[in-house]
Image (cartoon, rainbow, N blue to C red):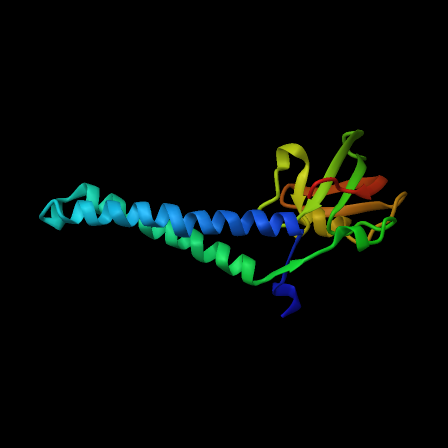
Length: 162
């Protein structure tokens, strides 16, 4: 069951919880009103507004269910208590991509905090999994969908603001 747990920082958990509350208490109420208003317009078989509102309601409910599931499986990680010399969830890692001779920096984050454009990747991603447990100076080969990438780990620090 431990592999079903989702690591999150307190900040990430609170952000996801606030988004879930907004979906449940604001957006779902609005879409339910749209369904009711469209239903009052008569024949439902030819009522495009009704069908669109019901579809939006279904999509929103699916997002609410997904967020509820992630929050239920969340494990709050105190990044200040994690090792500083080993790559773990919450680490900021500077690597040299040995294939293109270019430095890259990654922060290993939990769901809802990822932003690949800013180097914030999921700790459960192929690169994240390939880096976890490694130390400064190590060279690692990681299988990714486009092939194998090779990194030399240049520096490890605690990520800021995750």
